[in-house]
Image 1 (cartoon, rainbow, N blue to C red):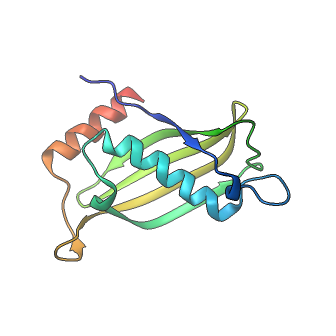
Image 2: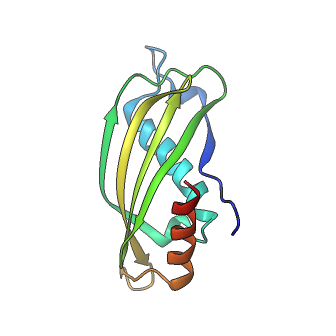
Length: 132
């Protein structure tokens, strides 16, 4: 079994931080996507292979960058037939700043329609879940 990354350092860019010194709530979505894409790509699932169907975000505390990166953590994954449920966080000085859950639908771009997970994708996700 290959160990896959379950954390990712998301780069903070100067326009991401607003006048109050924290990352804007809409930018948080981009940070979560960057981190999730990094983890899922290690499972053979590219960004264009899935679309967001549902998301829940809990802004626990402000994300006030202490350096050039914010830490993303991938906490759980539950593969379905055509979808994946993921739980993830953004960390601020070792504490959860943002907790989220997403339902991603596997996507056939040529047909603009959902598709089933492949056996290889399912196995990679289940192995990732074991590593969490």
